[in-house]
Length: 211
Image (cartoon, rainbow, N blue to C red; front, side, top):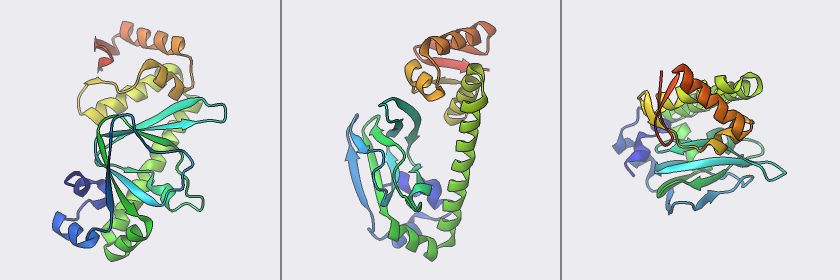
């Protein structure tokens, strides 16, 4: 349970205080690689916090076409804003990319925590605000950006997440194409052009250096 204590939701709260507040008012479940954690449109009754591993969030439209939204690694929470929505349905299907552990905190317990300690409330609001900003930028990029600008933003995000200009991307070209709403050949051409211009340098299978 060490990673949960480092979740942004509990920033500023020491382990001892958090243990006293939670006092076992949560449940924990392990998931094997490839196992579905939750399905799209499922009622969201408890906040999910990734304790170990990584979950992939995918959205499927009415035609059955899937798009990878993001990968959620420990110790992040999953879709906190949807927990308190009037229609509290998960917008994505969550699948374990690796051996993963998820902590489930019931909505009523989370509400009690926010009333008990203002830091939890502030962190919750901060997290929701940050996600709104992220999603607005993602919508802007998908709506108005070129394939190259979408890729540049994606590589910048990977660089930031990994803390290094050298990283291995967690998505296949088809998954990226689906996410960006473009064809795979068009995406491959854009990547090739970025390699030729020196913006990215391929170091291995799905491993790049971004400048």
